[in-house]
Amino acid sequence: MGRLSKPVSASEVVSYRLMMPSDVNPAGNIHGGIVLKMIDEVGGIVAYRHARMNVVTASIDRVDFFHPVKVGDLLILKSAVNYVGRTSMEVGVRVESENLTTGAVKHVGSSYMTFVAMDKSGRPAEIPDIQPVTDKEISRYDEGAARRRARLGLLRRRS
Ligand SMILES: CC(C)(COP(=O)(O)OP(=O)(O)OC[C@H]1O[C@@H](n2cnc3c(N)ncnc32)[C@H](O)[C@@H]1OP(=O)(O)O)[C@@H](O)C(=O)NCCC(=O)NCCS
Image (spheres, rainbow, N blue to C red):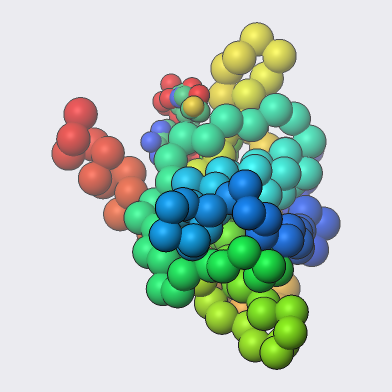
């Protein structure tokens, strides 16, 4: 029997959180670490939904923050599976902030993360393939494949 293939839409997630005073650094901006934790959480949900089994974070690519986030901003995290290997998958997370008074939306940053699905004995397990349908999903798939090659090449050179 062939490997099961699932659409991107079956696991994608949009998550919202209002930024609170407990999230800020002494300068009054939101801590980058708070946003990174939210990225890891939402990416993990998407990966778990795709695999329908436990996943671990294997790697997080470089993350750049383009704009500060302020208390009272609505943080919006849009996340989907871009590419699937055998046991691992690349999940993309786009972070936006919305000023609730003006409605202005800014692209705060984006992240590409690799999650690995684990079976009950803690070993990497095969997951369903991904089926890109829209033009955007197809270009994300192709770009995800190229990033995976670069990532694994770097990993081999380091070890
Ligand atoms: C991620 C982990 C399971 C990989 O284990 P491993 O023994 O290298 O397993 P494998 O060699 O079989 O690789 C499994 C998959 O992970 C991918 N992978 C492994 N290390 C990777 C890395 N650093 N970045 C991206 N992908 C990676 C492999 O390419 C392979 O993908 P594929 O099946 O789609 O081809 C293991 O390193 C681990 O458990 N790390 C800790 C994860 C964790 O606890 N994260 C939270 C930290 S607080």
